[in-house]
Picture 1: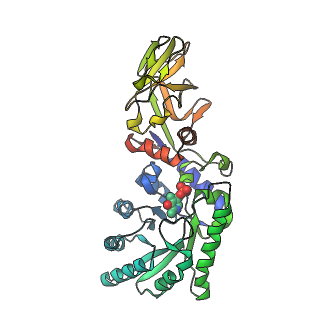
Picture 2 (picture 1 turned 90 degrees about the vertical axis):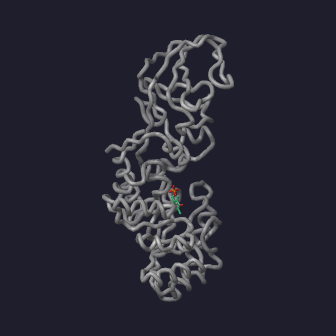
Length: 364
Ligand SMILES: *Cc1c(COP(=O)(O)O)cnc(C)c1O
């Protein structure tokens, strides 16, 4: 697997241009969507990213361990026994309830530290955070906390990628109404951050002070319909090669469970990759690869480490020829949106699955 860091720089700059004055919090959870946590963080730090977002404390600590100095927010829920490690490593904490703020404040006080917190308001996702209709107590508690700096206040969209914009508008309204309490109390407004990839593209009024791009950074819009908004470059490509060539006779069946039958004598090659490499088994008899600049169909069930491709009766390919599973070859390309559509999942899921076991090579 090749991961192109110059594409990351391109995407970062493209998002920055699109959002204008808002800051960027690149989201690096799940090993940077499979693109490599540390390599992506280093590249983005050198580009001047204002803050990083990860899911877990452990990801943030690992970045600190490797010398990343940029502020890092762990977006997920925090448990009481993690708070000391947050403080020791100077990691921003998601304060998702009044009780959590109290815990954080107490721990910071006893360690003689100051906690950097971001208040999480639930405006409709129903994941973590205090419901918008009862968030006043959360905010008041945070304002009264002696050892906490309220760095940010945020929420998360459930449906920002869809063409129906109603729910996102409602979430934005709820958020703005909730945080108006800061103005009513005449205290400084913390950094407001709300927009994920879908909202960055199609809800400009949600950009506020900072945006939180995940998928966009790695070169994908969440849906085909949103592809024209910003011009992005894919970071990940997956290449293999032909390891076996054979002629399959008319009537012969291919691979486990005999799900494909040759309707004529045809040429079939074997590729050394499979669902053990995160190449979804559901692509059996459905997916394509690129060989010699052309699309060729996968035939039969994908095995754990191998799968077969039909070249057709006159198709040509030799052992060692390049096979593209994800990426460009000649004029043709196969991307994670295509694979996601074919198997009914999300492009993030496709990128992540592929990255779990394959060795990764970063280049510029
Ligand atoms: C994952 C995540 C994001 C980024 O989402 P994308 O749609 O991939 O841009 C932003 N904010 C939070 C809280 C997230 O969990």
